[in-house]
Amino acid sequence: MSDRLPLAFFLATRDEPVEPGDDTWLRALPLSRHPVLAVAPATVEKAVTYGDYFTAIAGFLEKDQYRTVKTALADTPDPDVDLTQVRDLAVCLVKHGEFYHPARVVVATGRGEKSFVVNVAVSPTGRDRINQEFKLLERLGSEFEKPVLPKVYDLEEITSLGGKKMPMFSGRWFEGFCEFHLTEGQPEGMSNVIVWDPDTPLFYLTEKQAENAFRQVAAILTGAYNFFTFEQIGAWHHAAGDFILKPVDADRVDVRLITVRDYAPHIADAEADPEALIEGLLLFFLNLTIRNRIDRLDGTRALAWADDYTLQGTIKGFFSGLESVVRRLNLPPTFANEFKNYILAHPPAALRDLFSALAARIPDSSPEHDFVKNRIDQHADLFRSFLV
Image (cartoon, rainbow, N blue to C red; front, top):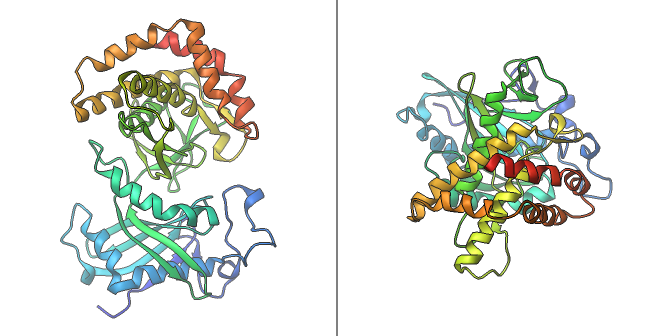
């Protein structure tokens, strides 16, 4: 093997090469998937170019004799593949996120291709969060009963050839998993949940697959909830593509969570007495049923509210995740059923008041404030009817 591996750069797919000096290479990198935020204001520092982005990733891959490439190769079902068998590397820019600009690195070897992700923080928001996120993914990844979070490898700050400093970290790539979003319209017999697969035309989930997707989202978030400290995964959004899926059959999908931006108590300065623990779990559950229904049409357009059947999925997913919490904490095996009865002991008006209080926490300046407020009473009544 030569000292440096052949390395090529692409946009979303390898049908879109980017080479040093071409028009794309010299163009400013969008800061978001939203067109209105695509170009940095003139008052901030000089924009990062595609060339800055790709050369920084190249430096990261080559650092310490391709350390992160070696780590990624070891984290595969075929760990006997090593650097001597690598033929070339391809870096594909997956998307322009408000927090990160992730790249898929495809490693071509004599035994096929292996992929891993490099999340690059280009925006100030991303740079502020990346160190914390790396630590949270390391911390939480081992707490689930199956690998629903990406295993992370290395975190570095790299300077591009253009002098731009960009922090980034590498991690496991979930092969075959794609973003999914609510959309307008739907074919007969299908849901209005569409899947963005870059290798195939967009396709719709069946209603059972969609219900299963929202069920698994709820199970993952509940499984990560810390019953004794009130810590939860926060700042997640369907519109940001934080959850991805892969169809299994006509009824089921597999779901993964690819980011953890925040993990903190949702109740500040609460005493961990039995009553507070139960109330904390109840508020987490009710808020989860709200957040899991909010998306943007096709990920970037108007706010969208998931259909009623997804609420059924969320409720089922919560109790599935709660069972894993019960096992992990050695709580009484009857805990989940007793908690359900505790909720049902609340009169309908009391539940509506709790839901309304949660909706009121959304800042007035957020477009989600009125969007949720106008739907919350119906949501509360539907929640209770599904829970019975």
